[in-house]
Image 1 (cartoon, rainbow, N blue to C red):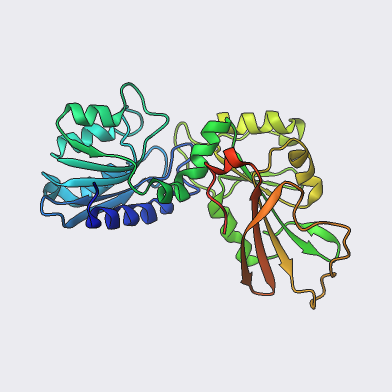
Image 2: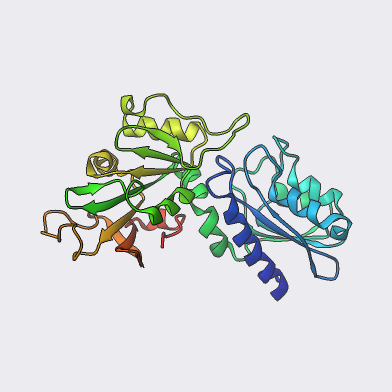
Length: 306
């Protein structure tokens, strides 16, 4: 059973892992905290972007020799294969880690899995520690793997003329870029949410998304490493995805009816049928409303937007 300090370290690791959102795909965002043999924190790290060191490698580097005989607390099962970075389970073994505490088992693990290899090496391993909390960060990556396509969020705002792009009008809506890998705009532009310098095997975008059907586009994006897609625009953009049951989340910015925006006339529902509100927060001159699909099986994997 995880100790109270290990639980606190896991929550720290979960928080750290979120620094990798929007920059690690197709890899998952992972965090790690190292405790020394006496149970004191001596190092921490997270996976910043694909092609660079994983969370365990960064945390071990920070801990140095103090990691020997200690505990690694990590949000996802240490990887069991060599890619752009070394196998994390081997890094932990080589550093002399005596115990590993894990939140979520990696569904993409190779061979017998990192847990099995760690135990073969005599390392004590505990799994499923605060897994539900860790899935607040890992959930959409995990769901994209299960669905075989990116998780799709539709983002829009109401104006006097109807629904349109929120990113072009509301500065606070730009936080949604951190919850996406790429953005599809109403004019057909498909761009990385946060432009980065990518190495081999990073996100690859299809040439002209308007020439592809919705299923084809999502299949191509998933193959290119995209795990989270943001639709930024009105109903013309979202309607084909909604009709194909391909929208998982909706985030809308509803203006103060006392402003220049029109009041509701009943001609458009706030949320399409099949969605329910999961969060409401007030921002400058708007109310941000988040919703998710009424799909019990899918919701088991999707963290609810707030």
